[in-house]
View (cartoon, helix red, strand yellow):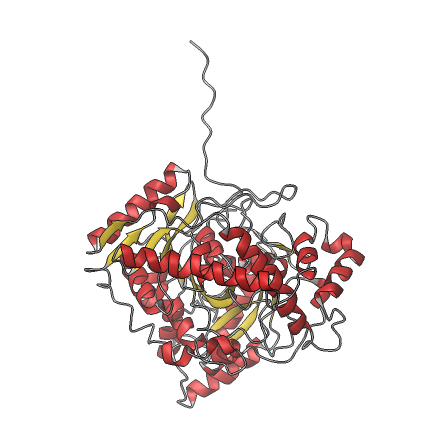
Length: 539
């Protein structure tokens, strides 16, 4: 679900994420240099023998302790995997024996803590109600990453229950993980619900991570933390063994510092899962996403410009105009598209759908958890939270849970009608119509505005100019790529296309990224970079 509404760390000279393949990865004393490292770059270092997977795991664990637990205390990594070093050693042995699984072989990744892994870690969704949820099973998307050679380094924090518990939530907070902070300004919100995955990638606590999105939960934290986030077409990546909100809108997706890295992750994650009917077409639809990364992908491309998504900040307008100049300079033909005209009722329809599906889907998931998990239904979770209110309900309540448990179910005619209408408004009459009428292949707009101040009293502020709703409700792909910053706060550029257009979005996002070089590096500043001039005496 989307949000409802320090001293600078020195850079490794020449090791910007998009240029890192040639930088040495091992420091004197055997410690791997992982700051600002890309997945692709680490893969080259492993292949050349300049580092090992064990050295990478050790370096990331040291950095997690120094930056996430201490130092700026970002609180983006909920738990580290005690088996990570053994996994790394086994993969180093495979490499030495000449067995290479692919470009992710031996690279540590982080996984959002609503996605199950077979490691000795619980999958909590940030809730104390799932503290005993050690399932011993990999979600199929994790199994695919492991088969590709990736190492599960640990689990990342998230907005509790993926930000679906209350309309008054504070994004990035959970009872299990506490409050995750932005590495760009520690008093600013990092957005939810894949907060920890975005922050950890931005802060070089891993080169890549898995996030999940129902509406904005990959793209908003990616935008606010200056990283790349891709919400795939619903059905491209399996949702089995992922704590659910909505089978209509839920999907997992990659989060990384570069578009190339996101493509590498998606290539491993995507595919059909017999247990998830939505993925029936995935094997036939998936593409070679890395091969689609063409620096000339924008040449001759007609792209629709969503100027109505820019919000109210002139600084965001200026960033967007600069980004459009990059696209135009790369050969894209830009077409201003009229405001979509989607009825205001779409938001209410979406909420009705999510609350109905949450009750059914979460009850079904909880029934599969180990016997040690005593909350077997959403009603049980509500009762647990009330009983443990001091830990679970100190900042906001559970009003959405209470509305969801009262929903009439998936056979309710009003729900069925709402689902059909919302999909049509967002898809056929929304994105598809805009593409068709303007003869464009994709849409671009600011992903959202810059980060708001975290407010533990009033909760999240309204997200300014968010582009997430239409692709989320339609189930279409949405890519956010760093566009620059406003007063030290990152802002992303969204690329939105029809179903199964991930390769085209990644190709154009890559071409833009290579020219714009707009990803801000975290400074761990205590607050936003704003200078207030001294008062001047009246004359």
